[in-house]
Image (cartoon, rainbow, N blue to C red; front, top):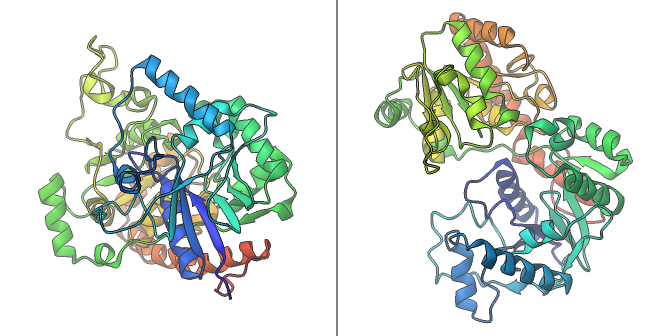
Length: 454
């Protein structure tokens, strides 16, 4: 019996800093292969489109090229759009041992085939317009399904095209994203009209897709996500984790609060800081995440309110461009490698994740899986994901958030109870349950994968 051939896109995998969608993509490829499918990944790297196979392989792992001068970039964009209009055939990228891939697993998930179309995703977004047909790409190998892990204005010819829409935050909370709302809505509406199927990651997102885009309920499947942490990190001896926390960050086990994720309006970091300060907790707050847009507004309470200093030198952006206060109470970490992030999560007194809106809320579930108490939101998908294993609050109510922090701080039994419930709730989103949901979704397309029922 021939294995089903399923392709996914590498749009988020190629980004400099991975996102929750990149994690989704890696888990999807891994579980599809575990279920017996042959998996291919379609990239849109800037280069690697030439005839030299070795160069194509090298370019796939190359660092992000330096930005081009504006006029040259405009010319390159024009060329890429023109080529995309001609329905290009993706070039195969060989997977050999000529390139040392160890340490680059985040960029290349488990895959049997890899293809590339230079500047594919950038050109597709630039060509997209409401009412305009999606750009088409041809693959050199027959594929049963093209599973787009993000709502991209693209389709693969000769395959059934399904799309994962994680959430509709740009439409539900337009002030929290920088998306071109007209283009985004046009893309989602065309997906709603033409996709062979739509996948999403929570019942909350499914309701939004049905109500905002008018998609019949039977055309949308909820698979949730798969939450996994490598056993070597999840079960690392506590003594070693304590030493890492002290040595790398100067932190004590159980002696700090933690937020991790992008610092942007949707993540509600400004209110987290306000609630933390109002709680009067003696433990520091650690904020670990890359700086998104409106970072100055989100971190405003960390700086002198009346005399914020913005240097004229544009090289100084974000927090380093302002005068800090509260240095000993709020600790900013731009980045922590995953192995240290896991230790940060495990050693936290609690993870604070009162996001305004989430399609799934992977950080909350990752913390619960590791046995760390969680305070999160009572909105969007988060209540269905965390169940009764986390403390939930109104993310717009800083007083309620402060009281939740006080309760977690003062009540050892509450923290212990949440630490016990968390891993049990997270098990509902393990690989076995995810496999069953994936298999059920693909069965609707006539694709048989291994696995049982959730």
